[in-house]
Amino acid sequence: MREKYKYDSVKVIGILDGILLSVWLILLFFLLIKSDDLERQTFWILASIASSAMICSGARSSVSMHFTADDNAVTFYRFFRKKIAYSSIKSIDLRLEKRMYKTTEGNRTATRPYFTEILTFHCENGDHSFACKSEPSQKTIMCSNNSEIVSPDDTTYSPFSRLKVYIEERIPIMQAD
Image 1: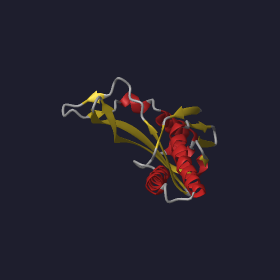
Image 2: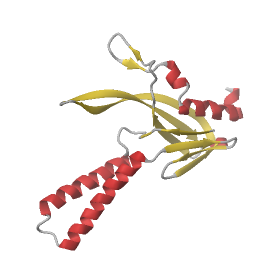
Image 3: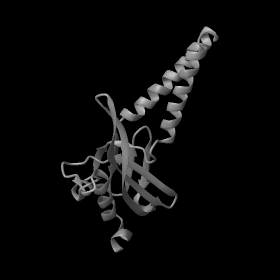
Image 4: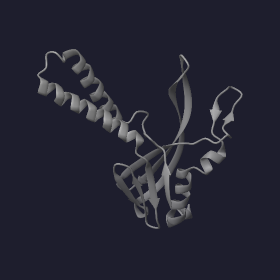
């Protein structure tokens, strides 16, 4: 089983994304204020560090993420490769989390919800969590209080729920439960 999915951070703002953004903003602010006082070489070194942080941050969000599962292990790919053997998995949790993002509509800012699926493998060597943006179908349900919930079809056919079922079928101890 091999599938691509839209990456999302397990935490609301990933630690590395926050560090890269902070480095970029601090250096950019410093360069704008102190550009006249800095030597030419120092200015270009700091400017290259700031642009590298900005490029890395942009590249992190644009690189596609995918996983490959076979009969013995699942491997997640992005900038890194994380292989998890089925024999080390104690349990698997899949949860759905509602998050908000800001968007501009004309001349006003609106807050829109989206859903993130978080798949957590509880293994002998610790927990490993992966997150993906849930792609809602047209069946997203509006409740009477104007809140949205994801339809059962969206969670049943999502890449992470299919992966969870695929792995559970191959682990004998989970079939006994």
